[in-house]
Length: 104
Ligand code: FES
Image (cartoon, rainbow, N blue to C red; front, side):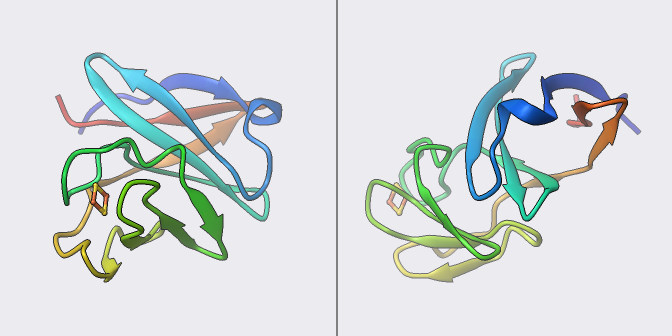
């Protein structure tokens, strides 16, 4: 199991928004859904556009490039042209810090 690393403070990711962070070379989108934090790959599985610039509605994020939609909690692709699921990473909050664990 990979170690958790701190990537942001909770106040840096507003509810209903996503923020791009890097764990090593891996871009990760930290998403705040109603005060709960989730971590997904920031690379759309359709054509590798950054997802963190997309709109979040409920537990879904819409890719800003072609409007494919993914479930933030499961990584499942829900709306075409997104078809392949996204990696989802363990995410936790410790002492006001958002931490994520990305496999090496
Ligand atoms: S790059 Fe995300 S839907 Fe096409």
